[in-house]
Length: 90
Length: 270
Image (cartoon, rainbow over all chains, first blue to last red; front, side, top):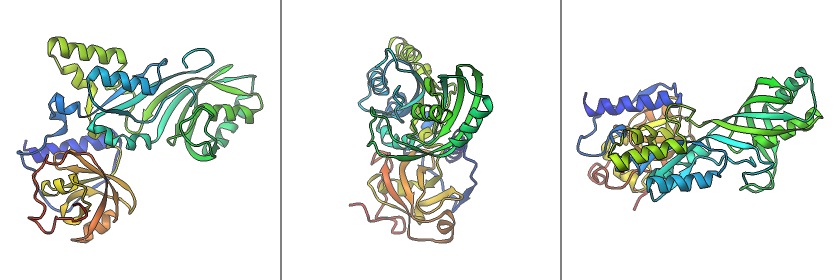
């Protein structure tokens, strides 16, 4: 399969994952170059660690903040952030 | 904070890594779903409980609790659905779908007040954050550390790759716009997106909607705010269509073609 079809397949799989049922409107046919960028699912691990997301099942003890700090250390990444705190006082 | 008096709180906590963290705001603003254990302080009729639940569905007023990270003024939060999953007095198992920033503990306390018997939240589990649910990618700290060990000690990255998803999944629930290779680097430098750069897009985008801007390979280039509707973008051949709100891709990932193609060039960047 050519890289443009692979890319568009990945985009459709994103829609499925996110529960998006919208139709696609096509302005023009265009292809993407093999020379630059990467299909996200084929990113080498070092790139994935810089453009990735890990969905953690937060344990009951620590705060979201502490969990982020642990994940950051475990995966040895310079930055990490969580998608909305999950705390007892909520 | 763990000890006495605090409810057990667990569940879906997406953590973005490295540069991907720039996209995390989309998750904070996304809707959430919880399963919560409500403990009633005295018996109530099930029909009365159902009535009160109906009252608390829709828009509710909430003042953030004393221990919170936001300003403590009255806020309106949307509760999309509250479902009773199970009743075993004094416990009621609830499923709650709500807008971001809703305090479920407060919601349950307030329902207790309206019921007249009082109630508190005993346990809370988040089962959905934006597009993420309790899927096979959901990982405990323990399993994640095993995956890291497998990689570090044996050089096997298969488990780690199972748990670390490409950051694009963070925007999977959003409306999307796909752009040409030649338009990417201008956006990476902060330029807004003009119509000629757009190759395809989702139907039904309205002016003001927040959209994900992707490359033809599916890479998240930037987050943007629509300046035009999908229809306007399809019917016109020039003009700015999407305002660049947050750049995700690293400049230089794609070649700098701006300036070569006048139609694609945008000049809000430097």
